[in-house]
Image (cartoon, rainbow, N blue to C red; front, side, top):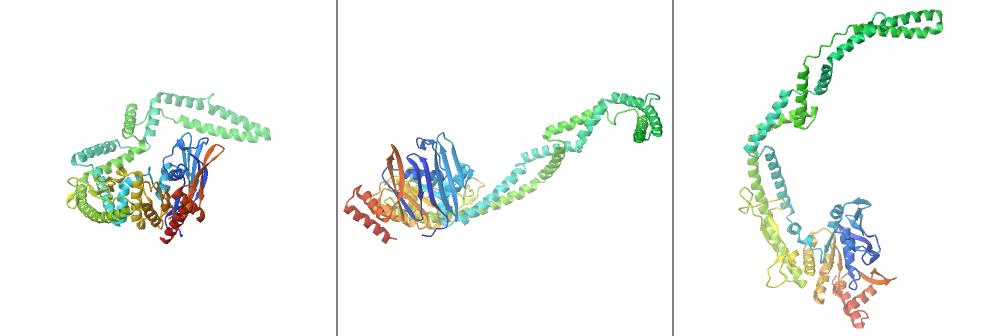
Length: 558
């Protein structure tokens, strides 16, 4: 069988899960059934798949004596193989990997979860989710284009509402925001902030605060350099004269004489510069003015929660906000007109979507009911559309205000009445586990041609069914397996006979411990297994003949 587009499981490895010590199972395309005695571990393999697709991990499922359970899954998706690994430790910790990359459980569920659908006693949430139901109906109805148009219009409406809120909402709020923006702009403009001023002020303040000491130091420096006899200039001149005479008498001192002469020249320049120092008279602003200016800058920084450079940004922002809010009234009128026109378009698009959905709901329900009848369930499946009520100002859908979101203006619900005379209810609440699985199967069969290939897992789908209904169930699974990879845990030989691959799950005791084994059966072994399912272990020739007949009928039906 050629691989369909989409995804399928290649191999599953399980270790340390309840009575499973270590097993590895290779899967093929088409229909694979798992059979075996109750308690052998068939449903544990389904639990392992649930863990691999991001399901909840329970440390209580770790095999006694093991520190962890481990599930590794090799799955082919769009022609590329991936390996997903899930480990649950006895102390409660859970670890997930995809292709050796450590990932969150959420990412594991997001990437692997959509590739595997599990239908069983405890896996009702996905089919019972209203969003999922609406998605399935739209796929059947080929309504995706209509829904995409509604979603696009809703996004445009959201953008306009967001812009409208940004303009200040109603007039009172806009005027209040405008007043705040003007005040901020005026205060910042009045402050005439310029970059670098804060550092300049701090330097001026430091000098102004020490003016007397600065003047005294000026005098001390002039005296140290220019005192007639003890000043550096006088002493440097003496040193230069001595060095010059020394160099005349001792040639080795010539370099020293040059350095002393250079030092004397430098000290002479310093002395003249110090002599020109004027008494420190302070800056143009007084100490009080400097302190007030610095306090203003720091107060503005605290008010706007920024630094000096940020005040200039805040001024630009305040000017832009004033300009925007000043012209908001005109823009508000434009947006209001656009919203009115957009609401009309949303109403038209949502009406078209509802029309397509309504027609699709009728045909899908009819198709599912036909499949339910064949599965020995009442043909009481229905898909009512519940228009979502709106208020004045909401789009008109079929002439009535409707709260339309990106999925349209309808709530979709899959309803089912399993018992005659009882009202229908949401399938996830009113159907038993086995019934829900068969309803899921009927829906999958109806939608199979419109769905991308993936793995469908059915556990306990045959609960309460007899031989004739079981044969119909098996054929239904067989038909779906032409599009999807189907794995089914079954107790009915009529279902098992339809399989492309038959896996027998058994348990045995080794050294006082129970171990689970998984065996892929040959054609001869399948006959033995089906006979045992028909008549128990040690079945006679009659059961063997019946098993051969089941397999022959299955082959003829392909």
